[in-house]
Image 1 (cartoon, rainbow, N blue to C red):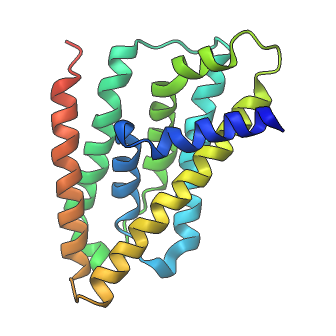
Image 2 (image 1 turned 120 degrees about the horizontal axis):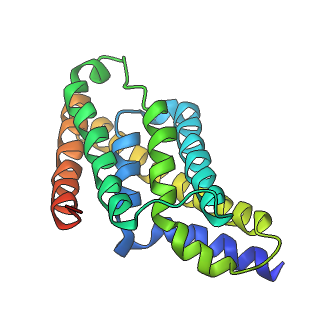
Length: 193
Protein backbone atom coordinates (compact mmCIF):
# COMPACT_ATOMS: atom_id res chain seq x y z
CA UNK A 1 0.00 0.00 0.00
CA UNK A 2 2.91 2.31 0.74
CA UNK A 3 4.27 1.95 -2.81
CA UNK A 4 0.81 2.68 -4.22
CA UNK A 5 0.69 5.98 -2.32
CA UNK A 6 4.19 6.94 -3.46
CA UNK A 7 3.52 6.39 -7.17
CA UNK A 8 -0.05 7.74 -6.98
CA UNK A 9 1.26 10.94 -5.35
CA UNK A 10 4.00 11.24 -7.96
CA UNK A 11 1.35 11.11 -10.70
CA UNK A 12 -0.93 13.50 -8.83
CA UNK A 13 1.75 16.09 -8.18
CA UNK A 14 3.26 15.66 -11.64
CA UNK A 15 0.12 17.40 -12.91
CA UNK A 16 -0.60 19.69 -9.96
CA UNK A 17 2.97 21.04 -9.62
CA UNK A 18 2.73 24.70 -10.57
CA UNK A 19 6.39 24.66 -11.67
CA UNK A 20 5.43 22.08 -14.33
CA UNK A 21 2.56 24.20 -15.58
CA UNK A 22 2.75 22.89 -19.15
CA UNK A 23 0.43 20.02 -18.21
CA UNK A 24 -2.10 22.44 -16.73
CA UNK A 25 -1.90 24.69 -19.79
CA UNK A 26 -2.62 21.75 -22.06
CA UNK A 27 -5.61 20.74 -19.94
CA UNK A 28 -6.95 24.29 -20.14
CA UNK A 29 -6.90 24.37 -23.95
CA UNK A 30 -8.36 20.86 -24.13
CA UNK A 31 -11.26 21.58 -21.79
CA UNK A 32 -12.09 25.26 -22.35
CA UNK A 33 -14.31 24.48 -25.35
CA UNK A 34 -16.63 22.33 -23.25
CA UNK A 35 -19.42 23.23 -20.87
CA UNK A 36 -20.02 21.71 -17.45
CA UNK A 37 -23.00 19.72 -18.73
CA UNK A 38 -20.61 17.92 -21.11
CA UNK A 39 -18.61 16.40 -18.26
CA UNK A 40 -18.86 12.86 -19.71
CA UNK A 41 -17.19 13.97 -22.95
CA UNK A 42 -14.53 15.77 -20.98
CA UNK A 43 -13.91 12.69 -18.82
CA UNK A 44 -13.28 10.68 -22.01
CA UNK A 45 -11.02 13.44 -23.23
CA UNK A 46 -8.75 13.40 -20.20
CA UNK A 47 -8.81 9.60 -20.04
CA UNK A 48 -7.54 9.48 -23.64
CA UNK A 49 -4.82 11.92 -22.67
CA UNK A 50 -3.85 9.68 -19.74
CA UNK A 51 -3.80 6.64 -22.04
CA UNK A 52 -1.49 8.41 -24.50
CA UNK A 53 0.65 9.75 -21.67
CA UNK A 54 0.89 6.32 -20.05
CA UNK A 55 1.63 4.47 -23.28
CA UNK A 56 4.79 6.43 -23.97
CA UNK A 57 5.78 6.23 -20.31
CA UNK A 58 5.50 2.44 -20.48
CA UNK A 59 7.40 2.18 -23.78
CA UNK A 60 10.11 4.50 -22.55
CA UNK A 61 10.44 2.92 -19.11
CA UNK A 62 10.86 -0.53 -20.63
CA UNK A 63 13.45 0.84 -23.08
CA UNK A 64 11.44 0.50 -26.31
CA UNK A 65 11.33 4.22 -26.98
CA UNK A 66 14.11 6.76 -26.70
CA UNK A 67 13.67 10.24 -28.17
CA UNK A 68 15.89 13.26 -27.70
CA UNK A 69 14.92 15.17 -24.58
CA UNK A 70 15.42 18.60 -26.16
CA UNK A 71 13.04 17.69 -28.99
CA UNK A 72 10.37 16.50 -26.56
CA UNK A 73 10.78 19.61 -24.39
CA UNK A 74 10.04 21.71 -27.49
CA UNK A 75 7.17 19.54 -28.72
CA UNK A 76 5.27 19.81 -25.42
CA UNK A 77 4.60 23.56 -25.74
CA UNK A 78 4.08 23.06 -29.48
CA UNK A 79 1.17 20.70 -28.70
CA UNK A 80 -0.26 23.31 -26.36
CA UNK A 81 0.12 26.00 -29.04
CA UNK A 82 -1.57 23.90 -31.75
CA UNK A 83 -4.51 22.96 -29.51
CA UNK A 84 -4.97 26.58 -28.41
CA UNK A 85 -4.76 27.80 -32.01
CA UNK A 86 -7.42 25.30 -33.09
CA UNK A 87 -9.63 26.64 -30.29
CA UNK A 88 -9.17 30.21 -31.52
CA UNK A 89 -9.90 29.24 -35.12
CA UNK A 90 -13.05 27.29 -34.17
CA UNK A 91 -14.30 29.38 -31.23
CA UNK A 92 -17.36 30.60 -33.09
CA UNK A 93 -18.46 27.03 -33.90
CA UNK A 94 -17.87 25.95 -30.31
CA UNK A 95 -19.87 28.89 -29.00
CA UNK A 96 -22.98 27.85 -30.92
CA UNK A 97 -22.91 24.31 -29.63
CA UNK A 98 -20.57 22.59 -32.09
CA UNK A 99 -17.70 22.15 -29.65
CA UNK A 100 -14.25 21.31 -30.88
CA UNK A 101 -13.58 17.58 -30.76
CA UNK A 102 -10.17 17.46 -29.11
CA UNK A 103 -10.10 13.67 -28.81
CA UNK A 104 -7.31 13.34 -31.38
CA UNK A 105 -5.28 16.04 -29.64
CA UNK A 106 -5.79 14.39 -26.28
CA UNK A 107 -4.55 10.97 -27.36
CA UNK A 108 -1.83 11.94 -29.82
CA UNK A 109 -0.44 14.84 -27.81
CA UNK A 110 -0.69 12.71 -24.66
CA UNK A 111 1.95 10.50 -26.28
CA UNK A 112 4.29 13.52 -26.52
CA UNK A 113 3.62 14.70 -22.97
CA UNK A 114 4.32 11.22 -21.58
CA UNK A 115 7.80 11.31 -23.07
CA UNK A 116 8.50 14.53 -21.19
CA UNK A 117 8.28 12.77 -17.84
CA UNK A 118 9.73 9.40 -18.84
CA UNK A 119 13.32 10.04 -17.70
CA UNK A 120 12.21 10.98 -14.19
CA UNK A 121 9.91 7.99 -13.98
CA UNK A 122 12.72 5.68 -15.15
CA UNK A 123 14.81 6.90 -12.22
CA UNK A 124 11.86 6.53 -9.85
CA UNK A 125 11.08 2.90 -10.67
CA UNK A 126 14.75 2.12 -11.19
CA UNK A 127 15.63 -1.42 -12.05
CA UNK A 128 12.56 -2.95 -10.42
CA UNK A 129 11.43 -6.04 -12.25
CA UNK A 130 7.80 -5.07 -11.76
CA UNK A 131 7.55 -1.68 -13.42
CA UNK A 132 4.04 -2.09 -14.77
CA UNK A 133 2.18 -1.75 -11.45
CA UNK A 134 4.04 1.45 -10.43
CA UNK A 135 3.30 2.87 -13.89
CA UNK A 136 -0.41 2.13 -13.44
CA UNK A 137 -0.37 3.71 -9.98
CA UNK A 138 1.34 6.77 -11.42
CA UNK A 139 -1.24 6.93 -14.26
CA UNK A 140 -4.06 6.78 -11.72
CA UNK A 141 -2.56 9.78 -9.91
CA UNK A 142 -2.28 11.64 -13.22
CA UNK A 143 -5.92 10.88 -14.04
CA UNK A 144 -7.20 12.09 -10.65
CA UNK A 145 -5.16 15.31 -10.91
CA UNK A 146 -6.49 15.92 -14.42
CA UNK A 147 -10.07 15.45 -13.23
CA UNK A 148 -9.43 18.06 -10.52
CA UNK A 149 -7.92 20.57 -12.98
CA UNK A 150 -10.59 20.06 -15.63
CA UNK A 151 -13.37 20.31 -13.02
CA UNK A 152 -11.94 23.70 -12.00
CA UNK A 153 -11.71 24.84 -15.64
CA UNK A 154 -15.33 23.85 -16.29
CA UNK A 155 -16.42 25.47 -13.02
CA UNK A 156 -14.65 28.75 -13.82
CA UNK A 157 -16.09 28.75 -17.34
CA UNK A 158 -19.57 28.02 -16.00
CA UNK A 159 -19.35 30.78 -13.41
CA UNK A 160 -18.05 33.33 -15.91
CA UNK A 161 -20.72 32.47 -18.44
CA UNK A 162 -23.62 31.85 -16.06
CA UNK A 163 -23.13 34.51 -13.40
CA UNK A 164 -21.08 37.22 -15.08
CA UNK A 165 -22.62 36.76 -18.52
CA UNK A 166 -19.35 36.24 -20.39
CA UNK A 167 -20.01 35.02 -23.91
CA UNK A 168 -18.86 31.41 -24.45
CA UNK A 169 -16.93 32.34 -27.59
CA UNK A 170 -15.12 35.11 -25.70
CA UNK A 171 -14.24 32.70 -22.85
CA UNK A 172 -12.74 30.26 -25.36
CA UNK A 173 -10.86 33.01 -27.22
CA UNK A 174 -9.44 34.69 -24.12
CA UNK A 175 -8.44 31.53 -22.26
CA UNK A 176 -6.91 29.95 -25.38
CA UNK A 177 -5.07 33.14 -26.35
CA UNK A 178 -3.50 33.47 -22.91
CA UNK A 179 -2.34 29.85 -23.07
CA UNK A 180 -1.00 30.40 -26.61
CA UNK A 181 1.11 33.27 -25.26
CA UNK A 182 2.64 31.01 -22.60
CA UNK A 183 3.20 28.24 -25.14
CA UNK A 184 4.98 30.58 -27.58
CA UNK A 185 7.36 31.75 -24.86
CA UNK A 186 8.01 28.14 -23.83
CA UNK A 187 8.73 27.20 -27.46
CA UNK A 188 11.22 30.07 -27.76
CA UNK A 189 12.89 29.08 -24.48
CA UNK A 190 13.07 25.42 -25.50
CA UNK A 191 14.14 25.77 -29.13
CA UNK A 192 16.34 22.78 -29.90
CA UNK A 193 18.06 24.05 -33.04
